Length: 248
Ligand code: GLN
Image (cartoon, rainbow, N blue to C red; front, side, top):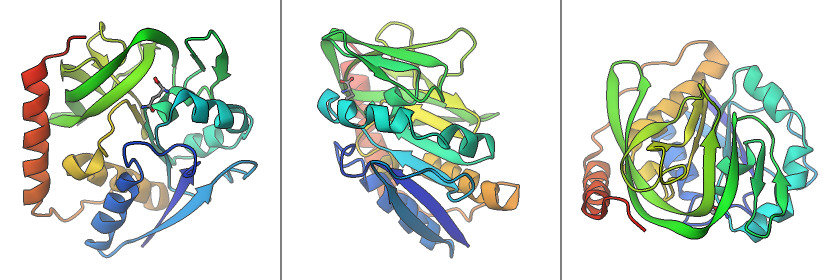
């Protein structure tokens, strides 16, 4: 089956090799006989409801976020596409812009899409380093997520909003709450770069399952893969995170 991906602003929001996440999705889809079809969605490009099964947006410096924020917030279609069942993976700067707003250190406020029940305010000191999370996207299936964070933004989730995971090591959303990222149904936002998916194949498969569910109704049982190398990469990243704890 063809899995249609809308890659938002690949030319502006792509730090820490975030586009590597697309490569992992493409390879893991192909290993199960599915094909990933990726379409770039840039400035002034519309978001057509139903045209994509999964949207992806990477991270970026404040400067790049400022260049795309108004176009993204004004795009329309993304909220409707999600309401119609499309999945989303948003990383760091992209994650911030899917909330209500991102307030830079200068005080300038970048408008957000309002897809996530949260807002972000940049602080003085950057939160940098390896991160390890405890996640439970599927009830009863606890998994760890390992990655790297580098952000000035402090993200505050609304009361009752669901984080992606609990911080075992690192700063996460705000360096205090112990929560990281946000999850709203098939929509995932996180500060974890790395890129994220090569060392967390379970999340790549979860996203592929959600994207396929957008087409078929139900997430299919994807054939398990060996993932030896991925497991080693996860262990190394998790080990680094544990050794740092989470201090400035
Ligand atoms: N510019 C944002 C911040 O500093 C996001 C950074 C990023 O994407 N790594 O918080």
